[in-house]
Length: 319
Ligand code: TYD
Image (tube, rainbow, N blue to C red):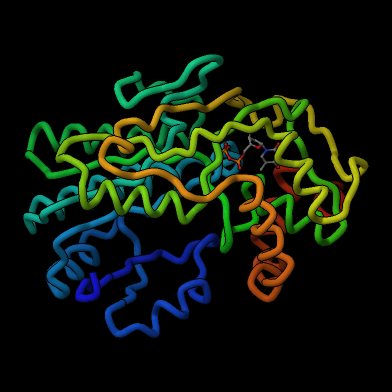
């Protein structure tokens, strides 16, 4: 859609990074505004000035481990921020509101998979905040007829991923010859989807989804954490002595397994394209190549103090 214009509102929190967007910002069809979705004046000012028709909400506090330490900012962004966006959609009569959510709202499942009609049973402060945002949307659909669609994505990986989640955190540490903290025995199962596939699924739901519906966006690609870690060790030339087992519950509630069906979005003509193992190896190669991108991020005081506070002072440097 060459005529489409994109307007970005980004709070540029610790996990945001303008350099990631530098190529996109050079395109005259792209506009950037710094600011928070919780700020109704900013949100409404942009919708008015830019004549926005479709709003996609990617904004979220998203790291489970940070939410274990402090969940207030998660409620602010993931619940209150969604409410502000919904009110703005109502006021400006937007054609579509797409909200990017997570499979974590379902909670953990030992066997089988969740479908879009499974109950929402979040177990962590982070997933509860995302579920809270979704419930605001449900109510806005019912009460005000907001034309909203929700996507629930699986664990996402790929380039430009802030080095705090399992995959980018471990890759950057292993490149630096530091040990990596595996919670428990690493037998937890996550369903991984490449960021390009995840983005494609969101776009598909935006264009082809039905008002009021929720769509899972996953790759049906389940891996135990330890399987993922072994590939990362291999690609960085490290052995198992680089694994530091951290007793669970390091995290408190630690969901055992996420798994969901994706037939609903598949039926609209979408399917993921990137095979996991080769794409994960490509991701490691990207982090080796783009140290200019991630080194400044891991050198900040905020980053170092989070790692030290969460994993323990002696672990910050040499976990
Ligand atoms: P993460 O990437 O934080 O995503 P989520 O919590 O949303 O699933 O974690 C993925 C899995 O990796 C999860 O089971 C927790 C585990 N994990 C570790 O073992 N060590 C770590 O340092 C991190 C960040 C995660």
